[in-house]
Image (cartoon, rainbow, N blue to C red; front, side, top):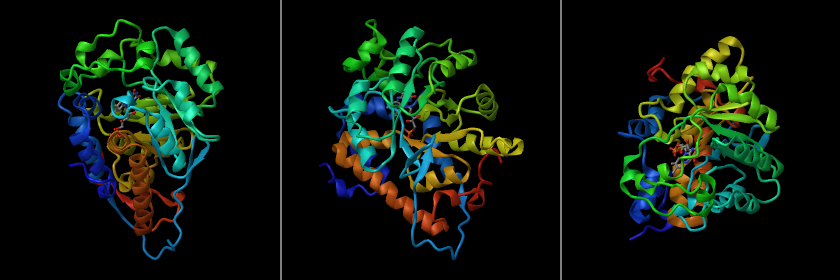
Length: 368
Ligand code: FNR
């Protein structure tokens, strides 16, 4: 029997409900990670290596969780990250995430491979609601240029270029489920010769250009005024190169453990990156985001203490949407908000700008 929504007390609860209630193919696509799923497992576990050093006797009567990302004010330091194929989990698809994001004034990243059309997702947004575009770069650059220019014209506030997927990872759970229903928009984007025998992910990814390289960045900078953020950066050398290439941000991410197995968790990479940037005095030259395995407000707070501007959350909102629709997404966001307020109070920080590295003990992280 399906638990009522009020019985979900944290983000993990939505996953348990979704596992038992979703269609098997949809569960396989959403939940799978690459190969042995070691990276997927470590994404959340890595947060367990960081402990707090709370400060006492700070006035925490009023807690303000608002912040800005890429210049846009928002109520919470997380965003709904891009996850493909929303209609696998819920027939209404990504527009449910749009409505949930609106209610809580959080930002939504729209995936290239959404099940709803790009314009449907923009139309579902209300005035002033901030959305970003996640871009898979097409072998045909004219297609990519059209998508980017259209997004800018329609008011998207950030272009997140996915750089960790020159080839889609092997998600064996998904491959076994012999996926058949990808949704009309996705078929348009990827062309007709879709091979469905290898699971959802591989069926929809054949158009992605594996020759994409640093040489292409100036072109992206020339075709749009939107801030450009590289999604899927995994070491400090590439963060430095990103800064030098003139982009405005990076997402330290391993694609939710769906690409290279044994890629490190975003939070581990963040701990490697920030000291080097501070040493160079470069910490304000770029906005750093982290995603993968963020399930608790304490995870969010740890990332912010270590220097992230915000964090992306993927699967939990998919599971909430699949199990309960909009009320599920609404509750998941509300739970995070409540957790944020309580934990900031207990740590002794009344606003986001007070979160800093003296509030965490990172000696348990393997790098440091
Ligand atoms: C993703 N992710 C992803 N990323 C991207 O750049 N383009 C995409 O199309 C997708 N699609 C996608 C589908 C599904 C089902 C998942 C779970 C993930 C990766 C996503 O943006 C993000 O990096 C991770 O989801 C973050 O990890 P968590 O929060 O899911 O643990």
